[in-house]
Amino acid sequence: MAAALSTKLGAAFIFLIQPMIKRVHWFLFISITYLLAGCATYYQQSVAFQERLQKGDLPEAQKILLKQEKESGGKNRFLYWCNRGWVEYMLGNYEESIRFFNEADLYIDDLTKNYGTEALALLTNPGVKPYVPEDPEKVMVNYYKALAFIKLGRFEDALVEARRIPQKLYELNDKYKNRKNRYSDDAFAHILTGLIYDATGDVNNAFIAYRNAIRVYDSIITPQFGIPVPEQLKADVMRTAWLTGFQEEVKFFEDKFNLKYQHIPLQGGYVVFFWENGLGPVKDEWSIMFTKIDGAGGWVTLANDQLGMEFPVYIGNLDSKSKGAFSDLSVFRVAFPKYIQRQPVYSTASIADSTGKNVWSLYKAEDLNAILLKTLEDRMWREMASGLARLASKKALEAAVREGDKNIGALVGIINAATEKADTRNWQTLPAEIHYTRLMLPEGKHVIKLTLEGKMGTREIPIQVEVRKGRTTFINWRTLDFAGFR
Image (tube, rainbow, N blue to C red; front, side, top):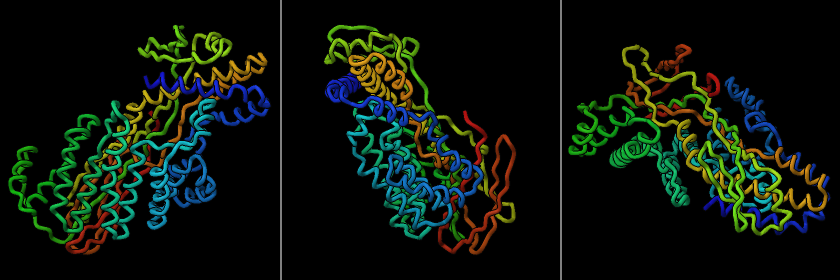
């Protein structure tokens, strides 16, 4: 039904502008349309930035973004602001990072359709429109803002950002009606909220947040994305329950996780360590070939027997010559986006203190690779409806031009095929995964050792940290290595 409605609207749009089309200087129109076609993916177009990123040369990556500042007002402005915000965060410029992520956040809140670009997208491809971020991209803006506020010691502001993540997902999921996304809540957001409450000494609210995180793992994240409840979360929910005096809850989680809780009083301070592993996926495109089946009452059906897909397309409002554009060919190609994963070099990590006697494992809490792939999969029917609306509009345009000049109409048909592309834009500085753990260390300065392990070997990284008595220090470490695409 969604596909039928979208294609009907696209056909109706072309029908309305046909009188104008006949008076357009076709050479100019075709030239502009051809320029909009663009063969490279968004990843390929940003190759200079990507190369600096993969080398870990963030100052040079920052210089590239500074030269592209005009994009802050263009169709890719969300991606520009996110990349600027992320690079500034990584360079330790936290106020600047928040400023750019605030721009991205405001863009999400104010996102409205521009009907001029919507119309142009029906005649070319969705890449001409302002980029609409994926749901996980929208909430990662709040994640990085929360981390930047933590670095500035502004824990109340960090809490606001962490709590906005599940609320934003609830609101987004409500818009999808009967086709709900599997990514309807984020367990890691609840963990982050709990960690911030914990750091401020509010163990009661920390316990509630940790308990909510376990609920989301059990109901969504583990069954849908295969991530079990992190061991660190199990320890934190029992610790905060014990500190709050909730002995029944301690017993409940002991039974649930088959663990025996042994309380260890805080000596010195805590270090909460986030490890952002690798780089998230990039978008490419794939195509589906549809066969046309003529119907009655102005309808045709586009079908792909191999995939078991059938979509009705309404063209009844067009004149007989316009309908003929669908009769000239029996097979049509429609392009859709897909993700290609960048395989992380490392799969596990641990941290040891300066003596090497105490070792803490890092536990995976968020798998952005899996979440992004399944989020795109969940909205694929909506993507297909849009693609079929585009196909109907292009063929109607071709028919309208053929009516005046067969040769130019044939050229429009060639350009229609050339401009049939998926939207391959996405936020490409996101990590593939997020792992975390909690360390207890004596007060003072320490050199801890982060050990990363993967199929290509082991890497050890010394990290300096200062621990304050009774306080929590947050560290966010990022590895940008990846072992290739898959």
